[in-house]
Image (cartoon, rainbow over all chains, first blue to last red; front, top):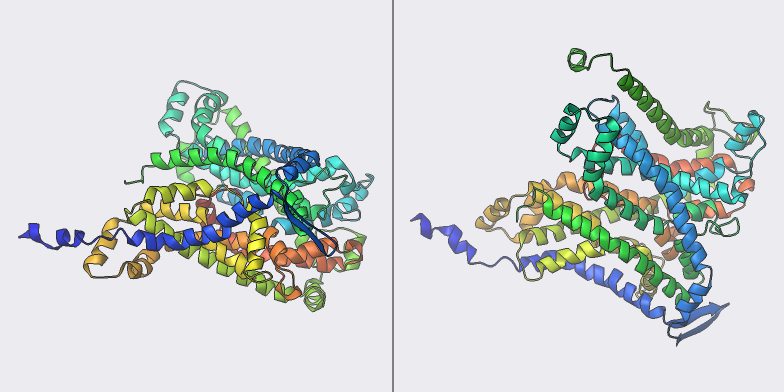
Length: 310
Length: 291
């Protein structure tokens, strides 16, 4: 009796087509608002199309001329600026985050007040970057609170935003503050995922904290470490709000803090679509190479995850 | 608690461990102070008058908080209340669209074995890392051709396709949503879309709430796209106002108003964060990707 009962009969109804219904909105919107714009951006990069005053020039097909023009412009300088600004915040960020993650997860240290510290160090990540930059601009302006404090200590006031190293340092400090909490939490999750018995075994064998870190924690943390590194690089390439607001879009002093997206933004606001397209294509190339590594690492972790059923 | 810790505590002879613990607390306090300090100055200066701010610095709050707020709100050049409203509107709509449709997409791929299923999944994962800025040029052109330039729709509608939110929902479903629930709804004769809305969505509530917060924050803080899409005065969102303030002649401004505007951009979210920080931090580790 039970063999001929309903479940088997029901299975004859094919529900799988419903999948298309559920994923349709995503794909329709993605194609219209991301894929086609991306392709048309590439198309624009082969045309001469800009404005002089009210007069529109082009679009005329010019082949790779825009790419050549971009490479001959200060594009490489801005790439180096972006890279430098990223390194200046990422190196201290990863060092501090690693130390904090090891401390937070250490079963021998047993630090108290962890929820409090985690809440505080993650906090700057949710702050509006442009408002944060405006705040730093106000704090470090010529007659701002920082200079007032310096004066109180009989130190000559510093005109922070006229100095190359100070401007870059301020941008890096802001990025550091905004991201080190996030990185710490990601690394912590990675360390907590390591089999506790490995740490126990190393403790019994009398390994020092440093030995445990370099021989056990670090090698097993590698996949997450690389994930953090690459996603941070992709984020670094997209650096915009902080230097844009801090330097009012100028990238001053002497465009040494001009980033790639600030350069792109310039072409977009001045409606030079040919050069803008070529700059976009270069940035796309850089992020896709990095993005592919992220994809691989995410997919391998995803396939390994125990919660996955099929 | 205290008895427990004394029982399990290692022998006190371990001087090195004690030292390391002290160092750790010291360093953590130092980092916490750096994180809090800028916001402390922000709050203090937002409560002081322009003259007070320029004369000297103190950690004691002043009495001008309300005055600065009223001055800012009544400034005819800033349209601050309008911008606050715009920002809340765009961010809420973005949060709704990104979570609802991501849950829908994830459910479609999780539940059904249709042709092209794994292609769809791999495609979304692959485009996850493509930054929106690289297609901005074509996006603006398309939006202009559609007659949507200087409207909120181009900032809201694309949230329907949010790969990161999708990935989070997908992982969440795999850990909490058994196929049997949907199958039993079928036996009861429920339509699949109805099942999704009435049975699946409530199960996903924690994930939706968390991702709604992240989407809201992302949209609230977004400066790049709105600055390129919105142009008229009454459409501006808060980050555009901040940029406008930065490009104006800064020293001529009432600094009390400047700090108050930054306050309004930051503090509301900060309060929400401090209430929900535990859940938010737990959520960071799952499916969160740097933007």
